[in-house]
Length: 194
Image 1 (cartoon, rainbow, N blue to C red):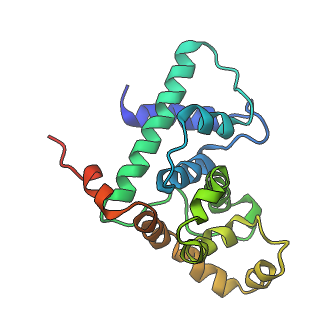
Image 2: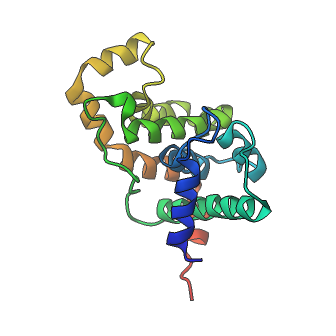
């Protein structure tokens, strides 16, 4: 099965209504895996897969379970390659919250990213708390998870500011990746494929 076919099947599975209400859909999963790919501590595969689904999904059979897990690992590897490349990260959605931010794919992606951060929150902020907090701000704002807090509510009122922050997300991801993963680790990911 080609990579594209595997990702299409993964997307159909993650976007199905049968999953738990708190399970992440495909777009949110992409954000989640992006955060896990940046985090300095590698989260064990079983742990992040369990957290992604909230409760074990009902697979048709063992083959489907293996297929979905392989698809998730493939997507994570693809995100890691993209982060390690010289290009800014391309998100699987428009960089726009639209007229209904709660229904936008970008909000879903950012919520997924923050779920990935929450999985190892202490690790994210242990070395460069101020820089990480500043870099995460556009994603935090776009996620809508912090709108109850006065500072975030204030930012949310300024749509031009929010739009300019959202446009920075691809650059922010590159900056977070470089900040969190020491440069000596980077060349390993960039070895040319034969």
